[in-house]
Length: 333
Image (cartoon, rainbow, N blue to C red; front, top):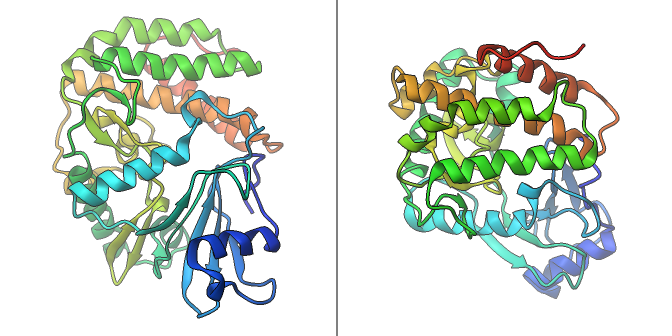
């Protein structure tokens, strides 16, 4: 089970009240075995719920009100609902239907929503467990690239958070995003292995390439294979839209392997997306986005309350690799 202090688990009694509000009293299940936690996520708690008539649905609950989260994670469930509405209205990308959302915080101290249960395999998990053939994995990765490109076709009104406040330039928006995370780390006393200003200096020295991005696009940010579902060799749903922003499509998770080989060969994803060889500007921008990801991986472990240092150590290793690529001095031991 993925443990994090942001997981807002609820008792069967509270879950029944949430079900009644969403689906009516005639759908309140009997017994206490009607909700099974979906455990591979790191932030929200999610349950697979069986209603009284046998229908299955998924419930997502945001973190408790008193738990400290990263700046980028504040009101994130509301961002996800806004993102899902955009995807549903402006693309043909398959996503679960939202059945009911409650933002009142009356039953629990957080936002929550119920959505359609997708009866399919998690693409990333099935791949890791060897349950899919290499041909199916390659085809699924290409399809994910194609779907991601369609998501990126949505043009936004500004750069930055979907619902604002926005920035007029991508340089300004991205600088604020990485600065927010650095300040989160400094506020929590997270040791990233080097002075925080080293990251700021790398960004400042390469920020001019960000000006090549002039049109804000819908970017998922978190579209890893584990956030997609596959059935019969086809991607049937894309999940977890909570981190979506108006940004540069090169920031998408599927491109991370370009800079960080540990994330896997992105060739099939890039083929499906229709992206070939990167220009010098694109290559530098992509490396900056991986740098941002590495800082997030390190800092968020403190905010999740992780006792296991695996993710922290992994993030430190990736940050060191990227800083070396940027010509920075080695990190402290």
